[in-house]
Each structure stands twice: as structure tokens, then as C-alpha cells.
Length: 117
Image 1 (cartoon, rainbow, N blue to C red):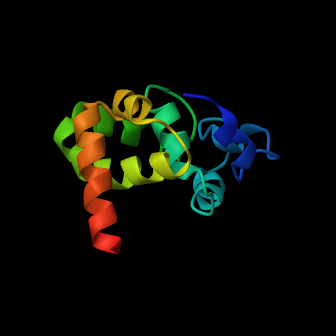
Image 2 (image 1 turned 90 degrees about the horizontal axis):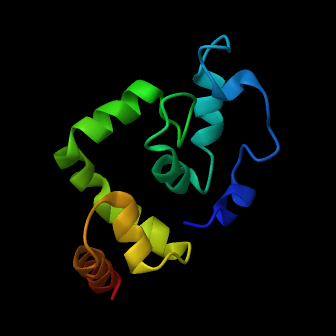
């Protein structure tokens, strides 16, 4: 996955300890910024294996639960697929990042097109 999305991130111009709750007073400010971000989903996908810091508005423990419960991740697949597709990622890359096959990506995108038609 290319990192072009990072340039559009709400946090792109904000540095410091705010992204690492163990060093900051509270994760609330970071999560509040994430919740306004247009690329929050991309950030979450990129940070799924990270064991520290705020990624996509989630704490490390939240991402660990998501990794440990793959069936719960499936509920989020449609919105992740649509969001990643809207940002120009190819189906193969989307599938690799969320852990499904390309056929699933195409099926979800087709269903979304049919909803809006």
C-alpha cells in the first residue's frame, strides 16, 4: 500500500506524544482528531499490526482484539473495502490488507453499486 494517504491525514501536521497514550496525559485528544480524519480507515489498516500508539482512532488493545477476532473484522469489511476503493487502491491490495480474497472485494463493490443505482 502506498503511503500517499498520510498527506491527507488530520494528524499530518501534528507531532509529539499525543499519538502515544502511555507518554501523553490521555488518548482523548488524539482520538478526537482521528474522528475528524478523512483517511481514518486507511490509517487503521496501516496500523493493525502496530503495538503502540493511536492508529485510525484505536488504542493498541483495541487493535489486538480486532486481530484476535477475525469474524468481527468481517463485519467491517464492506466499509473498509468501499473506503479503500474510493482512495484508488486496487482490489488485490485491498484484499491483502483486510485479509480476504479479491472476489470478496469485487462482490462488495458490486453490491454497493447496486445499492446506489
